[in-house]
Length: 177
Image 1 (cartoon, rainbow, N blue to C red):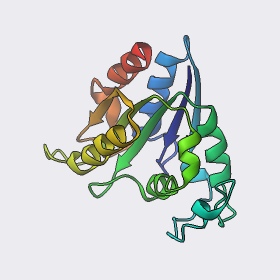
Image 2 (image 1 turned 90 degrees about the horizontal axis):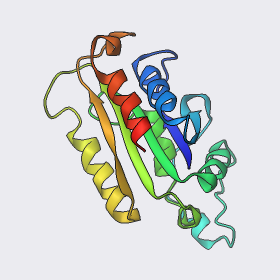
Image 3 (image 1 turned 120 degrees about the vertical axis):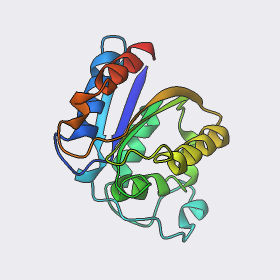
Image 4 (image 1 turned 180 degrees about the horizontal axis):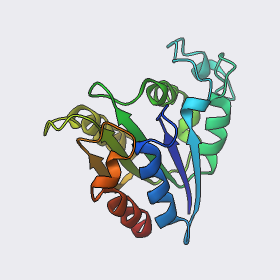
């Protein structure tokens, strides 16, 4: 299986990156895993112009790195969304990429499974509720199998994720897919 991980962390080597690495290490013996750090990509937010719906090739009028993400998605069998949670939502960088899936090209993708890796500094029980609601809506809309998730609370500083069971959980999730 081709697994594409879209990592939304702008903090290199931070908690999200460590979760992604653990998941990839678990999955890579049986699958091809590719990580795209969307922080390094120049992706503008969707303008809602719907020009892509009028284009025969579903081409977006914006000329940026989203074309590369579309190429990677075309080869993916599974998508993993990984993000820090700064204010009860996905990182802005990752949100821009996800919003650009408002493009009919998404109907050509053959992704069948999706997983979620989230890290937040707060310890509130409802910290991830809004993201989980969006995640379930995407699963339902695209008829995707939920491959699981790892949700980490209380991880503010780099390396805090190492003081939890989350890296082991992410590794096991990678092994199980």
